[in-house]
Image (cartoon, rainbow, N blue to C red; front, side):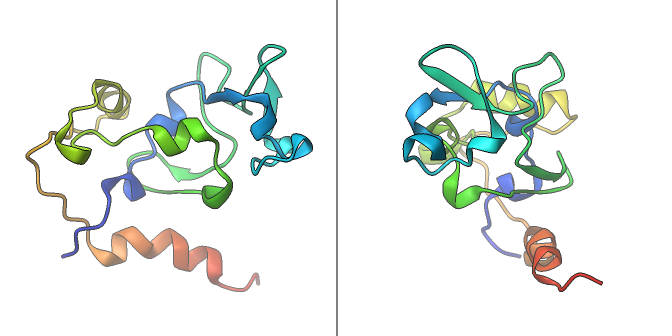
Length: 134
């Protein structure tokens, strides 16, 4: 067992909320977020493609929420993703995280929980991405 982050097998927030952020975070304005994965919300806001609809799902999310997920642009994700805290992180409950988890039938996370995800489960998607295409 390992103390890996449960987000690596969750992804519920990526398929539940609109992921909006300041327009200049997109690559066409010098930011890190690939512009082709965004859409305009207002003159000052953009969102990740796929998240501005009733059945939200970020276009950068790979895998199935609650199973094995990864962000295809993790190093270039917007500030709203970087700032969204997993429930229980730093001893704080994040009700938004737990609401998203409930939508996918996942149990809530609490500040006193010990997180244990097997290394195989947490890295399965990563190793799949690194294999050469057949």
